[in-house]
Length: 331
Length: 259
Ligand SMILES: Nc1ncnc2c1ncn2[C@@H]1O[C@H](COP(=O)(O)OP(=O)(O)OP(=O)(O)O)[C@@H](O)[C@H]1O
Ligand SMILES: [Mg+2]
Image (cartoon, rainbow over all chains, first blue to last red; front, side):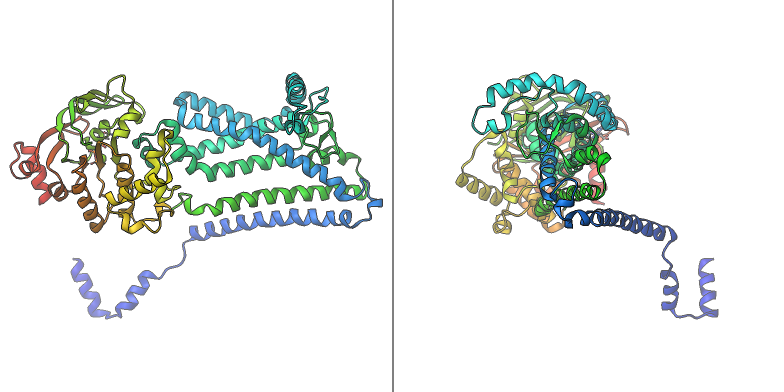
Protein backbone atom coordinates (compact mmCIF):
# COMPACT_ATOMS: atom_id res chain seq x y z
CA UNK A 1 0.00 0.00 0.00
CA UNK A 2 2.62 2.48 1.11
CA UNK A 3 5.02 1.42 -1.61
CA UNK A 4 2.50 1.92 -4.41
CA UNK A 5 1.74 5.36 -3.10
CA UNK A 6 5.34 6.52 -3.02
CA UNK A 7 5.84 4.92 -6.42
CA UNK A 8 2.98 6.94 -7.81
CA UNK A 9 4.21 10.25 -6.47
CA UNK A 10 7.75 9.73 -7.68
CA UNK A 11 6.45 8.99 -11.15
CA UNK A 12 4.02 11.84 -11.45
CA UNK A 13 5.91 14.43 -9.44
CA UNK A 14 9.64 13.90 -9.76
CA UNK A 15 10.92 16.41 -7.31
CA UNK A 16 14.24 17.55 -5.93
CA UNK A 17 14.94 15.48 -2.80
CA UNK A 18 16.73 18.41 -1.09
CA UNK A 19 13.59 20.46 -1.49
CA UNK A 20 11.60 17.74 0.15
CA UNK A 21 14.01 17.70 3.06
CA UNK A 22 13.83 21.44 3.35
CA UNK A 23 10.07 21.41 3.61
CA UNK A 24 10.29 18.94 6.49
CA UNK A 25 13.05 20.62 8.48
CA UNK A 26 12.08 24.20 7.88
CA UNK A 27 9.62 25.50 10.39
CA UNK A 28 8.56 28.48 12.37
CA UNK A 29 9.55 28.95 16.00
CA UNK A 30 6.83 27.53 18.19
CA UNK A 31 4.46 29.95 19.84
CA UNK A 32 5.06 28.60 23.36
CA UNK A 33 8.82 29.02 22.99
CA UNK A 34 8.35 32.57 21.79
CA UNK A 35 5.99 33.56 24.57
CA UNK A 36 8.21 32.03 27.19
CA UNK A 37 11.36 33.63 25.83
CA UNK A 38 9.77 37.06 25.72
CA UNK A 39 8.28 36.61 29.15
CA UNK A 40 11.58 35.69 30.75
CA UNK A 41 13.53 38.37 28.92
CA UNK A 42 10.84 40.84 29.93
CA UNK A 43 10.99 39.92 33.59
CA UNK A 44 14.77 40.14 33.55
CA UNK A 45 14.61 43.57 32.02
CA UNK A 46 11.89 44.68 34.43
CA UNK A 47 14.14 43.93 37.42
CA UNK A 48 16.94 46.00 35.92
CA UNK A 49 14.51 48.83 35.16
CA UNK A 50 13.16 48.84 38.71
CA UNK A 51 16.68 48.81 40.12
CA UNK A 52 17.68 51.67 37.84
CA UNK A 53 14.57 53.61 38.79
CA UNK A 54 15.31 53.24 42.49
CA UNK A 55 18.93 54.22 41.97
CA UNK A 56 17.94 57.26 39.91
CA UNK A 57 15.44 58.31 42.54
CA UNK A 58 18.01 57.97 45.30
CA UNK A 59 20.82 59.72 43.45
CA UNK A 60 18.59 62.47 42.08
CA UNK A 61 17.15 63.38 45.46
CA UNK A 62 20.49 62.93 47.25
CA UNK A 63 22.48 65.38 45.14
CA UNK A 64 20.96 68.53 46.67
CA UNK A 65 21.93 67.32 50.14
CA UNK A 66 25.39 66.21 49.09
CA UNK A 67 26.25 69.48 47.34
CA UNK A 68 24.59 71.93 49.73
CA UNK A 69 26.48 74.12 52.16
CA UNK A 70 26.58 72.26 55.52
CA UNK A 71 25.27 75.43 57.18
CA UNK A 72 21.97 75.14 55.34
CA UNK A 73 21.41 71.50 56.19
CA UNK A 74 18.94 70.52 58.85
CA UNK A 75 21.25 67.86 60.27
CA UNK A 76 24.63 69.52 59.64
CA UNK A 77 27.47 68.29 57.45
CA UNK A 78 26.36 65.17 55.54
CA UNK A 79 29.15 62.69 56.21
CA UNK A 80 29.47 63.60 59.87
CA UNK A 81 25.75 62.92 60.08
CA UNK A 82 25.63 59.75 57.99
CA UNK A 83 28.76 57.95 59.12
CA UNK A 84 27.55 56.89 62.59
CA UNK A 85 24.40 55.47 61.02
CA UNK A 86 26.37 53.64 58.36
CA UNK A 87 28.55 52.22 61.09
CA UNK A 88 25.50 51.30 63.19
CA UNK A 89 23.89 49.56 60.24
CA UNK A 90 26.93 47.42 59.50
CA UNK A 91 27.67 46.74 63.16
CA UNK A 92 24.11 45.71 64.06
CA UNK A 93 23.84 43.51 60.97
CA UNK A 94 27.22 41.94 61.64
CA UNK A 95 26.24 41.12 65.21
CA UNK A 96 22.92 39.68 64.13
CA UNK A 97 24.59 37.47 61.53
CA UNK A 98 27.07 36.36 64.17
CA UNK A 99 24.15 35.00 66.19
CA UNK A 100 21.90 33.87 63.36
CA UNK A 101 24.20 32.08 60.93
CA UNK A 102 25.58 29.31 63.18
CA UNK A 103 22.16 28.69 64.72
CA UNK A 104 20.45 28.68 61.33
CA UNK A 105 22.96 26.24 59.85
CA UNK A 106 22.65 24.08 62.94
CA UNK A 107 18.86 23.97 62.70
CA UNK A 108 18.98 23.37 58.95
CA UNK A 109 21.39 20.46 59.39
CA UNK A 110 19.29 19.05 62.20
CA UNK A 111 16.19 19.16 60.02
CA UNK A 112 17.89 17.80 56.92
CA UNK A 113 20.17 15.14 58.38
CA UNK A 114 19.45 14.35 62.02
CA UNK A 115 15.80 14.72 62.94
CA UNK A 116 13.33 11.91 62.33
CA UNK A 117 11.06 12.78 59.42
CA UNK A 118 8.01 13.72 61.53
CA UNK A 119 9.96 16.09 63.76
CA UNK A 120 11.79 17.56 60.76
CA UNK A 121 8.50 18.39 59.08
CA UNK A 122 7.08 20.01 62.20
CA UNK A 123 10.20 22.06 62.73
CA UNK A 124 10.13 23.14 59.10
CA UNK A 125 6.60 24.48 59.53
CA UNK A 126 7.52 26.36 62.69
CA UNK A 127 10.48 27.99 60.96
CA UNK A 128 8.36 29.03 57.99
CA UNK A 129 5.79 30.47 60.40
CA UNK A 130 8.49 32.50 62.10
CA UNK A 131 9.29 34.06 58.73
CA UNK A 132 5.71 35.29 58.46
CA UNK A 133 5.70 37.20 61.76
CA UNK A 134 5.63 40.96 61.00
CA UNK A 135 8.56 43.02 62.27
CA UNK A 136 6.34 45.17 64.52
CA UNK A 137 5.63 42.08 66.54
CA UNK A 138 9.35 41.33 66.81
CA UNK A 139 9.87 44.96 67.87
CA UNK A 140 7.28 44.68 70.64
CA UNK A 141 8.74 41.40 71.74
CA UNK A 142 12.20 42.99 71.83
CA UNK A 143 11.04 45.88 74.04
CA UNK A 144 8.72 44.04 76.38
CA UNK A 145 10.27 40.61 76.71
CA UNK A 146 13.80 40.35 75.47
CA UNK A 147 15.27 43.62 76.79
CA UNK A 148 14.25 43.10 80.45
CA UNK A 149 15.20 39.44 80.15
CA UNK A 150 18.78 40.03 79.00
CA UNK A 151 19.55 43.05 81.18
CA UNK A 152 20.78 40.97 84.15
CA UNK A 153 23.08 39.16 81.74
CA UNK A 154 24.40 42.51 80.49
CA UNK A 155 25.11 43.59 84.07
CA UNK A 156 27.00 40.37 84.64
CA UNK A 157 28.94 40.78 81.39
CA UNK A 158 29.89 44.36 82.24
CA UNK A 159 30.98 43.38 85.77
CA UNK A 160 33.13 40.50 84.62
CA UNK A 161 34.51 41.58 81.25
CA UNK A 162 34.03 45.34 81.26
CA UNK A 163 37.50 46.05 82.67
CA UNK A 164 39.48 43.51 80.67
CA UNK A 165 41.68 44.55 77.75
CA UNK A 166 40.06 44.05 74.32
CA UNK A 167 36.85 42.56 75.76
CA UNK A 168 36.39 45.87 77.56
CA UNK A 169 35.86 47.59 74.21
CA UNK A 170 32.67 45.64 73.81
CA UNK A 171 31.45 45.02 77.34
CA UNK A 172 32.30 48.27 79.15
CA UNK A 173 29.57 49.84 81.34
CA UNK A 174 27.49 51.64 82.27
CA UNK A 175 24.79 49.15 81.43
CA UNK A 176 21.66 50.56 79.85
CA UNK A 177 18.81 50.77 82.36
CA UNK A 178 16.27 49.48 79.85
CA UNK A 179 18.39 46.84 78.18
CA UNK A 180 17.46 48.37 74.82
CA UNK A 181 21.02 48.33 73.45
CA UNK A 182 22.47 47.46 70.09
CA UNK A 183 23.11 43.94 71.35
CA UNK A 184 19.41 43.48 72.09
CA UNK A 185 18.53 44.95 68.70
CA UNK A 186 20.98 42.57 67.03
CA UNK A 187 19.37 39.63 68.83
CA UNK A 188 15.94 40.70 67.58
CA UNK A 189 17.38 41.03 64.08
CA UNK A 190 18.95 37.60 64.42
CA UNK A 191 15.58 36.05 65.26
CA UNK A 192 14.11 37.81 62.24
CA UNK A 193 16.70 36.62 59.73
CA UNK A 194 16.94 33.14 61.24
CA UNK A 195 13.96 31.68 59.35
CA UNK A 196 15.21 32.95 55.98
CA UNK A 197 18.67 31.49 56.38
CA UNK A 198 17.37 28.28 57.92
CA UNK A 199 14.73 27.63 55.28
CA UNK A 200 17.08 28.12 52.34
CA UNK A 201 19.98 26.25 53.92
CA UNK A 202 17.71 23.33 54.71
CA UNK A 203 16.63 23.13 51.08
CA UNK A 204 20.24 23.31 49.93
CA UNK A 205 21.39 20.62 52.35
CA UNK A 206 18.57 18.34 51.24
CA UNK A 207 19.84 18.69 47.67
CA UNK A 208 23.21 17.12 48.48
CA UNK A 209 23.66 14.27 46.00
CA UNK A 210 23.07 10.93 47.69
CA UNK A 211 26.13 9.72 45.78
CA UNK A 212 28.46 12.08 47.61
CA UNK A 213 26.96 11.34 50.99
CA UNK A 214 27.39 7.64 50.38
CA UNK A 215 30.94 8.14 49.11
CA UNK A 216 31.77 9.68 52.44
CA UNK A 217 29.93 7.11 54.55
CA UNK A 218 31.53 4.26 52.63
CA UNK A 219 34.95 5.67 53.52
CA UNK A 220 34.00 5.25 57.16
CA UNK A 221 32.79 8.73 57.96
CA UNK A 222 30.56 9.31 60.95
CA UNK A 223 27.46 11.32 60.26
CA UNK A 224 29.12 14.56 61.34
CA UNK A 225 32.20 13.78 59.23
CA UNK A 226 29.94 13.04 56.30
CA UNK A 227 28.27 16.40 56.76
CA UNK A 228 31.62 18.18 56.79
CA UNK A 229 32.94 16.20 53.85
CA UNK A 230 29.93 16.11 51.55
CA UNK A 231 27.04 18.26 52.74
CA UNK A 232 28.69 21.50 53.82
CA UNK A 233 31.07 21.90 50.86
CA UNK A 234 28.22 21.18 48.49
CA UNK A 235 25.93 23.59 50.31
CA UNK A 236 28.35 26.48 50.79
CA UNK A 237 27.29 28.58 47.78
CA UNK A 238 23.64 28.14 48.69
CA UNK A 239 24.25 28.95 52.33
CA UNK A 240 26.16 32.08 51.33
CA UNK A 241 23.22 33.13 49.19
CA UNK A 242 20.89 32.44 52.10
CA UNK A 243 23.07 34.56 54.37
CA UNK A 244 23.06 37.36 51.81
CA UNK A 245 19.27 37.35 51.76
CA UNK A 246 19.23 37.36 55.55
CA UNK A 247 21.83 40.09 55.68
CA UNK A 248 19.78 42.12 53.21
CA UNK A 249 16.86 41.94 55.58
CA UNK A 250 19.04 42.82 58.58
CA UNK A 251 20.65 45.80 56.82
CA UNK A 252 17.31 47.22 55.77
CA UNK A 253 15.22 46.31 58.80
CA UNK A 254 13.52 49.45 60.06
CA UNK A 255 10.64 48.82 62.40
CA UNK A 256 12.25 46.49 64.89
CA UNK A 257 15.36 48.67 65.17
CA UNK A 258 13.39 51.88 65.48
CA UNK A 259 11.34 50.33 68.27
CA UNK A 260 13.99 48.46 70.22
CA UNK A 261 17.06 50.67 70.06
CA UNK A 262 17.51 53.74 72.19
CA UNK A 263 19.73 55.57 69.73
CA UNK A 264 22.49 58.13 69.84
CA UNK A 265 24.74 59.51 67.14
CA UNK A 266 27.96 57.74 68.05
CA UNK A 267 30.48 55.36 66.54
CA UNK A 268 31.13 52.84 69.27
CA UNK A 269 31.63 49.11 69.59
CA UNK A 270 30.19 49.07 73.10
CA UNK A 271 27.32 46.65 73.29
CA UNK A 272 25.74 47.35 76.65
CA UNK A 273 25.62 51.11 77.17
CA UNK A 274 22.66 53.48 76.75
CA UNK A 275 24.30 55.31 73.83
CA UNK A 276 24.08 53.09 70.76
CA UNK A 277 24.69 53.90 67.12
CA UNK A 278 21.42 53.90 65.23
CA UNK A 279 21.09 52.23 61.83
CA UNK A 280 20.35 54.08 58.62
CA UNK A 281 16.93 52.55 58.17
CA UNK A 282 16.03 53.00 61.84
CA UNK A 283 17.09 56.63 61.72
CA UNK A 284 15.12 57.40 58.59
CA UNK A 285 12.01 56.01 60.25
CA UNK A 286 12.56 58.07 63.38
CA UNK A 287 13.65 61.32 61.72
CA UNK A 288 11.42 61.43 58.65
CA UNK A 289 8.29 62.89 60.32
CA UNK A 290 10.21 65.99 61.46
CA UNK A 291 12.39 66.43 58.39
CA UNK A 292 11.74 69.40 56.07
CA UNK A 293 13.39 71.03 53.08
CA UNK A 294 16.91 69.75 52.45
CA UNK A 295 16.59 67.58 55.54
CA UNK A 296 14.43 65.21 53.52
CA UNK A 297 17.12 65.05 50.84
CA UNK A 298 19.69 64.43 53.50
CA UNK A 299 17.74 61.45 54.84
CA UNK A 300 17.31 60.11 51.32
CA UNK A 301 21.05 60.45 50.81
CA UNK A 302 21.59 58.20 53.84
CA UNK A 303 19.26 55.81 52.08
CA UNK A 304 21.60 55.93 49.12
CA UNK A 305 24.48 55.03 51.43
CA UNK A 306 22.48 52.01 52.63
CA UNK A 307 21.84 51.03 49.01
CA UNK A 308 25.56 51.18 48.27
CA UNK A 309 26.46 49.20 51.39
CA UNK A 310 23.99 46.47 50.47
CA UNK A 311 25.26 46.30 46.89
CA UNK A 312 28.87 46.17 48.07
CA UNK A 313 28.16 43.35 50.51
CA UNK A 314 26.35 41.31 47.88
CA UNK A 315 29.01 41.81 45.26
CA UNK A 316 31.76 40.82 47.67
CA UNK A 317 29.91 37.61 48.41
CA UNK A 318 29.44 36.83 44.72
CA UNK A 319 33.07 37.54 44.06
CA UNK A 320 34.18 35.20 46.83
CA UNK A 321 31.95 32.45 45.44
CA UNK A 322 33.14 33.00 41.87
CA UNK A 323 36.78 32.68 42.88
CA UNK A 324 36.01 29.17 44.22
CA UNK A 325 33.92 28.18 41.25
CA UNK A 326 36.28 25.51 39.98
CA UNK A 327 35.62 23.51 43.13
CA UNK A 328 31.94 24.32 43.43
CA UNK A 329 30.77 20.93 42.23
CA UNK A 330 28.74 22.54 39.49
CA UNK A 331 30.41 20.39 36.85
CA UNK B 1 45.20 -7.50 54.68
CA UNK B 2 42.93 -9.67 52.59
CA UNK B 3 40.13 -11.32 54.55
CA UNK B 4 37.48 -14.00 54.06
CA UNK B 5 33.81 -13.06 54.06
CA UNK B 6 31.03 -15.46 55.02
CA UNK B 7 27.37 -14.68 54.56
CA UNK B 8 25.22 -16.83 56.82
CA UNK B 9 21.48 -17.08 56.28
CA UNK B 10 21.42 -13.44 55.26
CA UNK B 11 17.97 -11.92 54.75
CA UNK B 12 17.79 -8.31 53.67
CA UNK B 13 14.83 -5.96 53.95
CA UNK B 14 13.77 -2.49 52.85
CA UNK B 15 11.15 -1.78 55.49
CA UNK B 16 8.43 -4.36 54.88
CA UNK B 17 9.87 -5.43 51.54
CA UNK B 18 11.90 -8.62 51.71
CA UNK B 19 14.56 -7.93 49.07
CA UNK B 20 16.94 -10.86 49.42
CA UNK B 21 16.29 -14.31 50.89
CA UNK B 22 18.67 -16.47 52.94
CA UNK B 23 21.99 -16.10 51.22
CA UNK B 24 24.76 -18.44 52.31
CA UNK B 25 28.15 -18.10 50.72
CA UNK B 26 31.85 -17.82 51.45
CA UNK B 27 33.88 -15.24 49.59
CA UNK B 28 37.54 -16.15 49.40
CA UNK B 29 40.39 -13.70 50.06
CA UNK B 30 42.89 -12.80 47.35
CA UNK B 31 40.34 -13.51 44.68
CA UNK B 32 37.74 -11.70 42.64
CA UNK B 33 34.15 -12.75 43.16
CA UNK B 34 31.55 -11.58 40.66
CA UNK B 35 27.82 -11.13 41.36
CA UNK B 36 25.68 -11.54 38.27
CA UNK B 37 21.96 -11.69 37.71
CA UNK B 38 19.09 -9.78 36.19
CA UNK B 39 18.20 -6.29 37.24
CA UNK B 40 16.47 -5.97 40.59
CA UNK B 41 17.51 -9.39 41.93
CA UNK B 42 19.41 -7.88 44.83
CA UNK B 43 23.08 -7.87 43.82
CA UNK B 44 23.66 -4.31 45.01
CA UNK B 45 21.64 -4.99 48.11
CA UNK B 46 23.80 -7.96 49.10
CA UNK B 47 26.95 -6.03 48.31
CA UNK B 48 25.91 -3.07 50.42
CA UNK B 49 25.02 -5.28 53.34
CA UNK B 50 28.61 -6.51 53.44
CA UNK B 51 29.97 -3.12 54.53
CA UNK B 52 26.82 -2.13 56.40
CA UNK B 53 25.94 0.55 53.87
CA UNK B 54 22.53 -1.06 53.49
CA UNK B 55 21.24 0.31 56.78
CA UNK B 56 22.03 3.87 55.68
CA UNK B 57 18.71 3.79 53.83
CA UNK B 58 15.64 4.66 55.91
CA UNK B 59 13.95 1.57 57.28
CA UNK B 60 16.45 -0.87 55.77
CA UNK B 61 17.72 -3.74 57.92
CA UNK B 62 19.36 -7.12 57.77
CA UNK B 63 18.83 -10.49 59.47
CA UNK B 64 21.52 -13.13 59.64
CA UNK B 65 25.28 -12.84 59.80
CA UNK B 66 28.13 -11.43 57.80
CA UNK B 67 31.45 -12.71 59.10
CA UNK B 68 34.75 -11.05 58.27
CA UNK B 69 37.47 -13.56 59.16
CA UNK B 70 35.04 -15.05 61.65
CA UNK B 71 33.92 -11.77 63.26
CA UNK B 72 30.21 -10.99 62.92
CA UNK B 73 29.88 -7.52 61.43
CA UNK B 74 26.29 -7.30 62.62
CA UNK B 75 27.15 -7.98 66.24
CA UNK B 76 25.64 -5.37 68.56
CA UNK B 77 29.08 -4.26 69.73
CA UNK B 78 30.29 -3.53 66.20
CA UNK B 79 30.44 0.07 65.02
CA UNK B 80 29.32 0.29 61.37
CA UNK B 81 31.60 3.26 60.82
CA UNK B 82 34.61 1.09 61.65
CA UNK B 83 33.34 -1.73 59.46
CA UNK B 84 33.35 0.63 56.50
CA UNK B 85 36.94 1.58 57.16
CA UNK B 86 37.87 -2.08 56.72
CA UNK B 87 35.63 -2.67 53.72
CA UNK B 88 35.99 -0.13 50.95
CA UNK B 89 33.39 0.50 48.29
CA UNK B 90 33.38 1.77 44.71
CA UNK B 91 30.06 2.91 43.25
CA UNK B 92 28.42 2.53 39.88
CA UNK B 93 28.79 6.20 39.05
CA UNK B 94 32.18 7.76 39.80
CA UNK B 95 31.68 10.00 42.83
CA UNK B 96 34.82 11.95 43.68
CA UNK B 97 34.11 14.82 46.07
CA UNK B 98 33.58 17.73 43.67
CA UNK B 99 34.74 20.34 46.14
CA UNK B 100 38.08 18.61 46.73
CA UNK B 101 41.23 18.45 44.70
CA UNK B 102 42.52 15.11 43.40
CA UNK B 103 44.98 15.00 46.26
CA UNK B 104 42.36 15.80 48.89
CA UNK B 105 40.06 13.16 47.44
CA UNK B 106 42.72 10.53 48.02
CA UNK B 107 43.31 11.76 51.55
CA UNK B 108 39.60 12.04 52.36
CA UNK B 109 39.44 8.65 54.08
CA UNK B 110 42.65 9.16 56.02
CA UNK B 111 41.55 12.58 57.21
CA UNK B 112 38.49 11.08 58.88
CA UNK B 113 38.49 10.36 62.56
CA UNK B 114 40.66 13.43 63.12
CA UNK B 115 43.79 11.49 62.29
CA UNK B 116 46.78 13.68 61.59
CA UNK B 117 49.15 12.88 58.77
CA UNK B 118 52.40 14.64 57.96
CA UNK B 119 52.85 16.30 54.59
CA UNK B 120 55.49 13.84 53.43
CA UNK B 121 53.41 10.84 54.52
CA UNK B 122 50.44 12.33 52.74
CA UNK B 123 52.46 12.88 49.56
CA UNK B 124 53.65 9.31 49.66
CA UNK B 125 50.16 7.94 50.29
CA UNK B 126 48.75 9.98 47.41
CA UNK B 127 51.40 8.66 45.07
CA UNK B 128 51.13 5.00 46.07
CA UNK B 129 47.34 5.04 46.00
CA UNK B 130 47.23 6.68 42.59
CA UNK B 131 49.85 4.28 41.31
CA UNK B 132 47.83 1.42 42.77
CA UNK B 133 44.90 2.65 40.70
CA UNK B 134 47.01 3.13 37.56
CA UNK B 135 46.24 6.81 37.55
CA UNK B 136 49.44 8.40 38.78
CA UNK B 137 51.00 9.18 35.43
CA UNK B 138 47.86 10.82 34.15
CA UNK B 139 47.29 13.16 37.07
CA UNK B 140 50.65 13.69 38.76
CA UNK B 141 50.93 17.20 37.32
CA UNK B 142 47.51 18.33 38.44
CA UNK B 143 47.00 16.93 41.91
CA UNK B 144 45.62 20.26 43.10
CA UNK B 145 42.96 20.44 40.41
CA UNK B 146 39.40 19.33 41.22
CA UNK B 147 38.70 15.62 40.86
CA UNK B 148 35.54 16.39 38.96
CA UNK B 149 37.65 17.73 36.08
CA UNK B 150 38.85 14.23 35.12
CA UNK B 151 37.27 11.97 32.53
CA UNK B 152 34.73 9.42 33.71
CA UNK B 153 37.23 6.56 33.61
CA UNK B 154 39.84 8.61 35.43
CA UNK B 155 37.27 9.62 38.03
CA UNK B 156 36.39 5.99 38.62
CA UNK B 157 40.05 5.08 39.08
CA UNK B 158 40.35 8.08 41.41
CA UNK B 159 37.52 6.60 43.45
CA UNK B 160 39.32 3.26 43.52
CA UNK B 161 42.50 5.05 44.62
CA UNK B 162 40.51 6.81 47.33
CA UNK B 163 39.12 3.49 48.51
CA UNK B 164 42.49 1.73 48.66
CA UNK B 165 44.21 4.71 50.31
CA UNK B 166 42.81 3.62 53.67
CA UNK B 167 44.18 0.08 53.08
CA UNK B 168 40.93 -1.82 53.51
CA UNK B 169 40.72 -5.62 53.74
CA UNK B 170 37.96 -5.89 51.20
CA UNK B 171 36.98 -3.90 48.14
CA UNK B 172 33.36 -3.93 47.02
CA UNK B 173 32.58 -2.67 43.51
CA UNK B 174 29.06 -2.09 42.26
CA UNK B 175 29.13 -2.08 38.44
CA UNK B 176 32.31 0.00 38.47
CA UNK B 177 32.58 0.05 34.68
CA UNK B 178 28.99 0.62 33.66
CA UNK B 179 29.50 4.33 33.12
CA UNK B 180 32.83 3.91 31.33
CA UNK B 181 33.99 3.61 27.75
CA UNK B 182 35.71 0.37 26.59
CA UNK B 183 39.25 1.72 27.04
CA UNK B 184 38.59 2.92 30.58
CA UNK B 185 36.81 -0.34 31.27
CA UNK B 186 39.91 -2.28 30.26
CA UNK B 187 42.03 -0.06 32.50
CA UNK B 188 39.76 -0.74 35.46
CA UNK B 189 39.61 -4.48 34.69
CA UNK B 190 43.40 -4.66 34.60
CA UNK B 191 43.42 -2.84 37.88
CA UNK B 192 40.97 -5.31 39.44
CA UNK B 193 43.31 -8.14 38.43
CA UNK B 194 46.16 -6.43 40.27
CA UNK B 195 44.06 -5.56 43.28
CA UNK B 196 43.19 -9.15 44.03
CA UNK B 197 46.79 -9.76 45.06
CA UNK B 198 46.15 -7.64 48.13
CA UNK B 199 42.41 -7.46 48.62
CA UNK B 200 39.29 -9.52 48.68
CA UNK B 201 37.45 -8.10 45.69
CA UNK B 202 33.71 -8.41 45.10
CA UNK B 203 32.32 -6.98 41.90
CA UNK B 204 28.77 -6.65 40.63
CA UNK B 205 28.51 -6.65 36.86
CA UNK B 206 25.95 -6.94 34.09
CA UNK B 207 28.65 -7.68 31.61
CA UNK B 208 29.08 -11.45 31.21
CA UNK B 209 32.38 -11.14 29.42
CA UNK B 210 33.66 -8.96 32.18
CA UNK B 211 32.64 -11.47 34.84
CA UNK B 212 34.32 -14.20 32.83
CA UNK B 213 37.48 -12.14 32.33
CA UNK B 214 38.10 -10.80 35.82
CA UNK B 215 36.53 -13.14 38.34
CA UNK B 216 37.65 -16.37 39.98
CA UNK B 217 34.24 -17.19 41.41
CA UNK B 218 30.80 -16.18 40.24
CA UNK B 219 27.54 -15.95 42.13
CA UNK B 220 24.32 -15.95 40.16
CA UNK B 221 21.31 -14.26 41.78
CA UNK B 222 17.77 -14.46 40.51
CA UNK B 223 14.16 -13.62 41.25
CA UNK B 224 11.53 -16.32 41.25
CA UNK B 225 8.93 -13.74 40.29
CA UNK B 226 8.45 -10.01 40.45
CA UNK B 227 7.85 -8.88 44.05
CA UNK B 228 9.53 -12.02 45.40
CA UNK B 229 12.83 -11.77 47.25
CA UNK B 230 15.99 -12.34 45.24
CA UNK B 231 17.93 -15.53 45.89
CA UNK B 232 21.40 -16.88 45.36
CA UNK B 233 20.84 -19.56 42.74
CA UNK B 234 24.30 -20.85 42.09
CA UNK B 235 27.78 -20.06 43.28
CA UNK B 236 31.05 -21.61 42.18
CA UNK B 237 34.24 -21.19 40.20
CA UNK B 238 33.65 -18.84 37.27
CA UNK B 239 34.84 -21.51 34.85
CA UNK B 240 32.17 -23.91 36.04
CA UNK B 241 29.33 -21.37 36.23
CA UNK B 242 29.97 -20.29 32.67
CA UNK B 243 30.62 -23.63 31.04
CA UNK B 244 28.96 -26.24 33.15
CA UNK B 245 26.29 -24.73 35.41
CA UNK B 246 24.21 -27.02 37.57
CA UNK B 247 21.05 -24.96 37.53
CA UNK B 248 18.84 -24.48 34.52
CA UNK B 249 18.22 -20.80 35.45
CA UNK B 250 21.94 -20.09 35.46
CA UNK B 251 22.39 -21.66 32.08
CA UNK B 252 19.44 -19.74 30.64
CA UNK B 253 20.75 -16.48 31.96
CA UNK B 254 24.28 -17.00 30.71
CA UNK B 255 23.39 -18.36 27.32
CA UNK B 256 20.67 -15.76 26.92
CA UNK B 257 23.21 -13.06 27.39
CA UNK B 258 25.79 -14.59 25.16
CA UNK B 259 23.17 -14.83 22.42
N1 LIG C 1 16.31 2.20 48.52
C1 LIG C 1 15.45 1.20 48.28
N2 LIG C 1 14.25 1.20 48.88
C2 LIG C 1 13.37 0.20 48.65
N3 LIG C 1 13.60 -0.83 47.84
C3 LIG C 1 14.78 -0.88 47.21
C4 LIG C 1 15.77 0.14 47.39
N4 LIG C 1 16.84 -0.16 46.65
C5 LIG C 1 16.54 -1.30 46.01
N5 LIG C 1 15.31 -1.75 46.35
C6 LIG C 1 14.64 -2.97 45.86
O1 LIG C 1 15.40 -4.08 46.22
C7 LIG C 1 15.45 -5.03 45.17
C8 LIG C 1 16.89 -5.31 44.82
O2 LIG C 1 17.50 -4.11 44.35
P1 LIG C 1 19.03 -4.04 43.96
O3 LIG C 1 19.34 -2.61 43.71
O4 LIG C 1 19.82 -4.75 44.97
O5 LIG C 1 19.06 -4.85 42.60
P2 LIG C 1 20.31 -5.10 41.64
O6 LIG C 1 20.42 -6.57 41.49
O7 LIG C 1 21.49 -4.37 42.12
O8 LIG C 1 19.76 -4.47 40.30
P3 LIG C 1 20.60 -3.72 39.16
O9 LIG C 1 21.28 -4.78 38.41
O10 LIG C 1 19.55 -3.06 38.35
O11 LIG C 1 21.51 -2.77 39.85
C9 LIG C 1 14.67 -4.41 44.01
O12 LIG C 1 13.38 -4.97 44.01
C10 LIG C 1 14.60 -2.97 44.35
O13 LIG C 1 13.41 -2.40 43.88
MG1 LIG D 1 22.61 -2.65 41.40
